[in-house]
Image 1 (cartoon, rainbow, N blue to C red):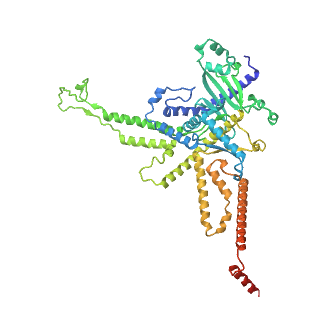
Image 2 (cartoon, rainbow, N blue to C red):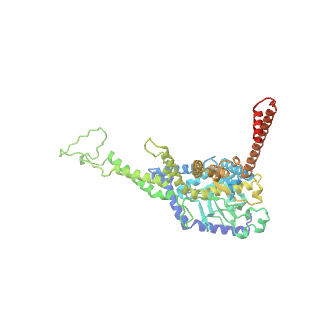
Image 3 (cartoon, rainbow, N blue to C red):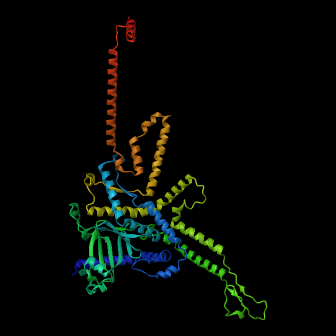
Length: 574
């Protein structure tokens, strides 16, 4: 297939960008650190599918203590439970700047429905598995990368990119907005996805030779980067609402075969309406692009731990089988447990003398325990085991609650960047793919006409703990006000009942349909007041009628209470 001049131009642009990002000194240092982390924490895997630089068997032999891997597993599992509970509704949608007294509208109902739809899509697809891999990489290597692509069956699908197989570039604000990656695919899959005519001539010939070449590995490069202005859709077309072509979208996606000739062109060029890459980072130094994780911090401790285990094994071997000084006449004689060996010697006092080891196993064990404690602390696994690490059986409830608050105080700042660079972009990308497939349902007019901005609210355990603290503070305030009413009854006029219900509802994260808006609640209260007034009036009329009926039945010709009252009135008048 003949390549166009534009293909050649795009190929030159993306190859230049990839080369610069791939050979950036910060990335080279980062990948080197990741290789060391893999050697000690993940000996079963290389630093990336395209960079298997060391033998797994050799790496296994160098790992004598797996406490770092164990601590990492605990930390990742704990963070997933606290921030991304499966099926736990860890996200909700709300309108930016909307007062709480306007809750319960059709817009709130639609947002709740949309959030449930997203939850269903994420559960059916591989979102939670992909998020777990990203959290794992961010803890171990400082950052993780995954591409959230559109899927015809599940709407979204996460493609995890192993460390070492990507290069990223940040914008002026420090946000990742460009990603280059390499992936290896069998020749058969490449031909099936892009077509045989898109392959270079050499690969076309290899494919046509038959099945013997179909599983030949082919390295593919992908560039996801902001599209140059000259290739974007004109602003006038966006204003007019014209459909946006894939090769005019804000981010372009370009595939080509690595090490192929420039004249071979591209496999494909398409685009994304949003940046489809998730790149959460644990810690980022000022002016840097790649993150720093717990793996980098514990690397020196893990190396020292392996060395001390090696020394401890040597000391144990010296104690169980020490070196021995023996007479020269015993050279070559076999020795074994319980054997008796007789030999002649001119020195009747000659005997075997063991050489005592000089190491101190107790000291070495103490050093190992201290290193293990430091590794658990740096990995953050001890935060998720505060209660299980308590010693003694008599533990008060106040102590457990205090430990839980301490855990939340520690996890909050640690997870802020993770949630900002993982949770929110994931929702934005999911919403874009849902909109592309027409899965938004009937969008309220307030969104279509009023341009309402929708914000993402996280409802994981960390967020729930923060809301619980706010709810407890509100409850304590109400309790204090109630105690004041006995001494200051006028204080009840200061309390806004509707606002109080909205505050409790917002802190609870309950279904918005459970709470009416202020207008609807006022109408209901007014109707109830009118109904009560009407009932009181009917009761009063019935009482008046009954009284009149009773008075009409009295015989005034005879003395009674009524005649006595009338006589008293007459006497008073005289």
